[in-house]
Image (cartoon, rainbow, N blue to C red):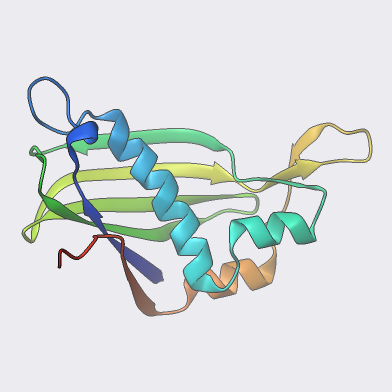
Length: 150
């Protein structure tokens, strides 16, 4: 499966009073990982939604995470995202957050390919074959969002 890796610099605003990353930030970063994964496949979500007005995106219907260790301000995390299961209208994405090569968070989400029918009702739709194929190819794509100091 296509794997997308993103470097994330933990900043002060990501942390709670205990000086560790506030857990909801990991879920925000997973949304970023989903978007980057689709972009890496050649099917950015923004472009795909713009090209198909009936589509409404990939609503989250299930999410679970296991927190194994903390991340602190100044740490650089590597987020890995990849599809690990295909259904007719849904798919699962696995996320791993690594710090210095050690996994500190693992997570899995179930998403549904969705759009509106002729009555305007939100419905699950079959996932297009070209999307499945692009996200199923064997490759790793890496992005860095870490700013370099001069």
